[in-house]
Structure formats: structure tokens, C-alpha cells
Length: 101
Image (cartoon, rainbow, N blue to C red; front, side, top):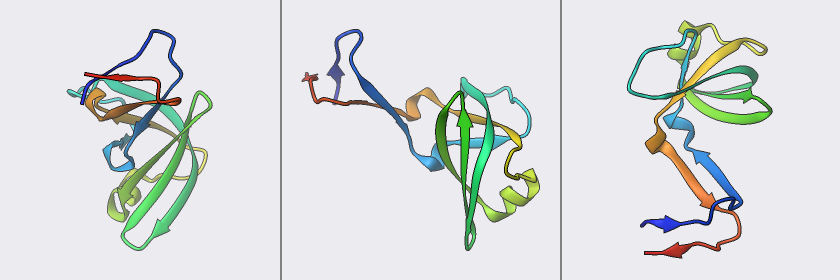
């Protein structure tokens, strides 16, 4: 589905947690979106670790395996890079004012 929005439309941008890659260094890759954030919360649920990080006041939620979490030595307050592809950003019209074509 392709939607067309007017310039200045009020939208949300959503990225699925499993589509965010975490790294201690900025990496050269095909993923063009690389932002530096601060780890704000960590929740370990069995083999999966939920990471909340803040980038310029915006909270991002991502998932890691426990082994990746341990190898990255992630802790609350640590600076970390979040990497994601543009194709993984879902733009959502807040007020459903879009036109479907």
C-alpha cells in the first residue's frame, strides 16, 4: 500500500524492536540510519534482552539475545549506537488523513 501525505502532516515513525542493531562503535554498512543514544532501561526475559535507549529525547526499544547483550557489555547510562535501515521505518498518519492509491 502506498499512502500520500501532505507536507507537514502529523505522523509517527515506528521501528520494530528486532530491526534495531546495537553497536559500541559506528559501523559502515548498508544501513544508513546510525544514531548515538544512551541506554535507559534493561529487562532480561530468559534468552531475550529488552533495551530502551534515548536519542535526543526519543525512546527507542530494541531486542538482543542474551549473548549479544553480554558481549556488548551494555549497562544503564552507557552510550551505544542504534543502526537501522530506512526500509524498517514505518510512517503512520496520526489522524488517518491519508489518501490510498
